[in-house]
Amino acid sequence: MPVALITGASRGIGAAIAMKLAGQGYRVVVNHRDSAQQADEVVAAIVAAGGQAIATQTDVTRADDVANMVNEVNQRWGGIDVLMHTALTPYVITSFAELTWEQLGGKLDTEMHAAFLVTKAVVPGMIARGYGRLIYMSALPSRRAREGMITLGTSKAALDQFVKYVALELAPHGITANLVAPTTVEGGTATRLIPPERLQAIAAGIPMKRLARSSDVADTVAFLASEGSGFTSGHYIPVSGGLE
Image (tube, rainbow, N blue to C red):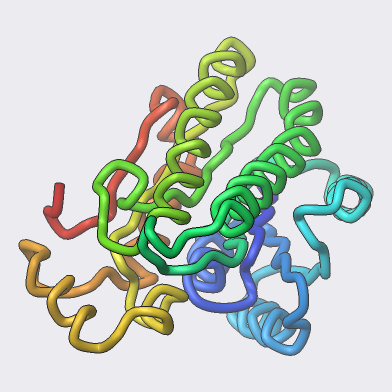
């Protein structure tokens, strides 16, 4: 059975992805930083449905934590076939006029540090096996500027370029690297930061007239994680209901 490591999988989009992949026969690693109860609930739901899953507490911005997590999974299940990097580091919604370098630079640092560490940790094993799927969570503001989203948009734009280079270098090894970029997701972090009237306006501006759902994102990830996506690499894939 293939093994999928999902960072930030204790709730929301990450949990939906974990449940989706487990339902498709993956052994799933449910990573969390400080939400053990919720991670255990995701694992319990997967096991109750007949799947295999474990929870692991790891801060993906700490090199030792990441190395220990990957070593544990390698020893338990023999390797990681799919990395779904969903973990979201904190950010503020603000104008450029009110923005501080600490806010922007801090988000850039944590965004890229986490992506760098988890990628570095899983790639050697993938190269050794000649197979791997790397998937990263981007966001539409990385390509489509949205008021107040300068920290998220800028950091995700850096992630987008990082993944392109990773995809280029690893393609000869049978490893793909792609980005999934949902619009605002129902129940996601952004919905807790954005006023309700703004959320209504965002939904109204989407051709399908609703926000994205976690299941929409999970369905897209399931394809990118599959063997059938083997010739799809280096792509930024919006999950946006037709919003460009």
